[in-house]
Image (cartoon, rainbow, N blue to C red):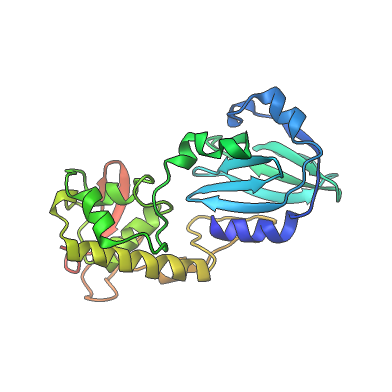
Length: 266
């Protein structure tokens, strides 16, 4: 998401929205009539990010966008035919479109006045960023110590840590030498520090490499990450651990495919 944010900033800042075409209105959570009436004439002034939310600064308004699992942004000439799964088309003043493409239609957009940003439920509940100095062992210990949930599940809880997805949760737990099926209340304070350290190291490296591309992700934005080349466990079932040469296992933890090394993680 950080990579997408940076690329979009280079491509659309200063561009004015001429028209909005909504082809699948369930993606829009705010009033649809207001959405289509207010956006034309507004200019992209900045693009922020809160966890997995992109927040487009449009002056008096924020357009909050969550891509969920399959959402993508494309920039295409306005003359180019609209294709299947392009659900929201922002026509810009340079004869290009910013097109939101979502195969599964899970993504969401919400247009709000700036003072109402914290009223967007998914935004105000976001936890601490993995690379923030506010992510401390004490913070995590307080979140984990009363929970009987799996530690993998807790790392995916966006109200605790904002921005760790399934891939990075596996990698963080490997980096911290913690088995994904440990219960939150079994995690010691020193292990919380290991999670903090691993989160920071892995996310900074992933940002440097442009994120992780597991499935084919083709976009006119040119967003194709390289961090998949550095993965230690995720999607490496049956392969040797790069540290101990044990065979990587795959299990399901609360419905999420989870990869780990039974020798390195305990």
